[in-house]
Length: 588
Image 1 (cartoon, rainbow, N blue to C red):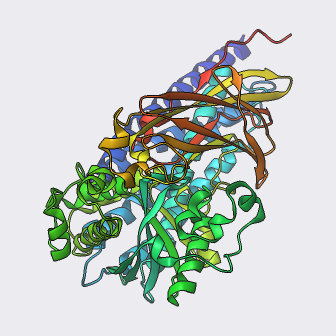
Image 2 (cartoon, rainbow, N blue to C red):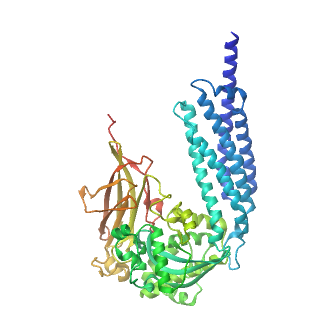
Image 3 (cartoon, helix red, strand yellow):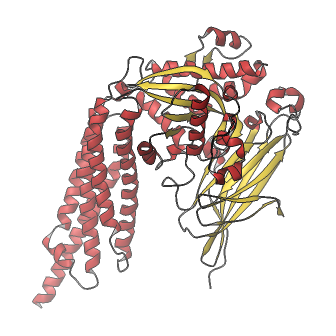
């Protein structure tokens, strides 16, 4: 009888501790959105208070899990592993709060973000350098906790335990990724911003009106110099000014097979490949051969991302005399985030007839925006958010010629790599290259959707559906300038848009074919770093729509599929549609 009483009392005690652990961890979790908002709002004081509250809840949960009765329960046959798993979750979350969140918020509050904005007089980068060890330590602590949870065997866990454990693992993976990125950024940024010595970068502004796989044809080139945080933009150039490379710059044979030898001959075509490290290193080699000027890396940005910068720094008045003269043709005298895309990718061609003057206006606008940025205009939060959005959409890309720096950059979307650590296991890519030799992509609207087909044996099958519409006016041949339509120079009727659509599947998968309207269409088949690559051509007269399905099979990865696309004039959120799953018969 005594044993029964003890057993009942023990069970009740364990139940109370389980309830305590659950309630405390739930309370801590519910505070995280507030903490994120406070950090985003630059409210360091409130963030510190919230972290203290989080730590109080996680400490209480850990204490409950360290209870002697709970520890004894970990040895129970059959059920013990469940008590062990819960205790490990409580301890790991408490470690994250104390060793990760608390020091990170402390470091964050020590930085004056507004003082880190670029300025003509330079920026004190020492606080950022000093913050790097603290951020790295926080990232390391969280990574250790994530690793501990990953090692728990879930085979015999109850659903009530396995579910929260899986959620905790996912949360920690997200936090670990974010902290690792912050640690790498704080380590690299000071040097790349010229903390020790000036850095020169070839700035490539991609013109989305004429599609290239990584965005658009290089619409303007300049050397961007960063010296202790100060920012200056040198004289402007264009891809045409660089001329033809003879002999051509050496390029990876796989990519040359897919995208032709043009990527090593013409600056206009270095980014026919979606692999930005290849495009950037090729552009760097061309620039140095043409000008004799050494650059430390390449930075790419497009007019949409320039609009995000303008949203942060405010309107920029056109003051340069040559630009003022060109603007008198009917272009705006003040650029904002609302009008810069239409101005640079459409209106400039309607208002200025001569292509060299169009290029001069494009380059001059970039000069005005970067001059305003170098004066420290705007706010750090808005600028970081704008550049962050541009990076996530593939509109801001960076390559460093220093191998140690590039090896870190290659882990992130900022690198624009199509292979390597930044690529998710089941990732697809859809990239567009203009085949019209014109600026008609401003009028093309596209959507990209992944369709999970029924599996074939142990393999997954995915269809990549690309829908394109030419929204140009029906009289585009006469109402749009010949420079925009191409004037038929490449055998494409004025107003018609021809696009080479290239789709990438995940490593080890196969290209199965392509179809339009249920009919098979021609598609080339190649490989790039182990990924299957298919390219087909879409030709659209004004008002026409095309939907092409590109099929991949024998996909060995079972992770949720993701897709990257060429950034265009459209909002990327409007281009990438939700993944659709086919209705499949039950196995067996």
